[in-house]
Figure 1 (cartoon, one colour):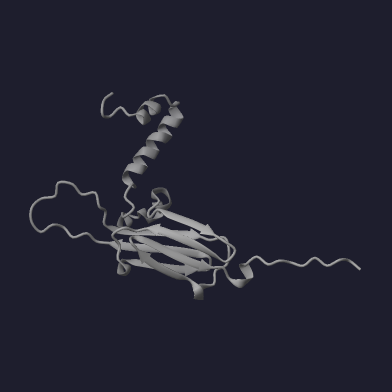
Figure 2 (tube, one colour):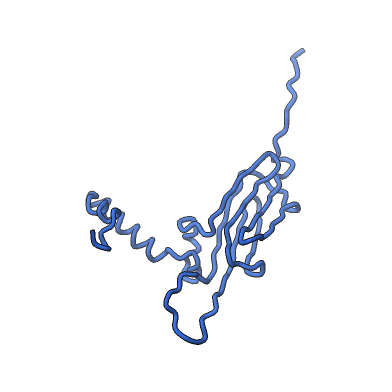
Length: 158
């Protein structure tokens, strides 16, 4: 099998004409929008597709918790904003160019990213807290009192 003939390209050759065109459009879009740091070119709109940073979200009856992998980021490079029940995590990372020699490979991306998450309940904005430890950003978003589950007493009819 040649280097250009991957299982995906083999599957591509077996698609119907209409789906082949859609697959080609998807491949071209993915190629040009692959960098999660391409915000200067408008890729912020594609963050959901690129999925940067990788995020885990979970909830319990008291709060939502969000963890985002952000290796190599410093606190000064990150911004967290809460508007209503939407949490936005954004950041910018600049990687210095070498002053001497030549670059053989550049895989570490620089630039900016934005990721917005809609949470399923009202948040108590005054009690939100965040920390960055070993490249993992953790944000705890306590539910507003009106969004916490309550037990409702059932009274017998008289």
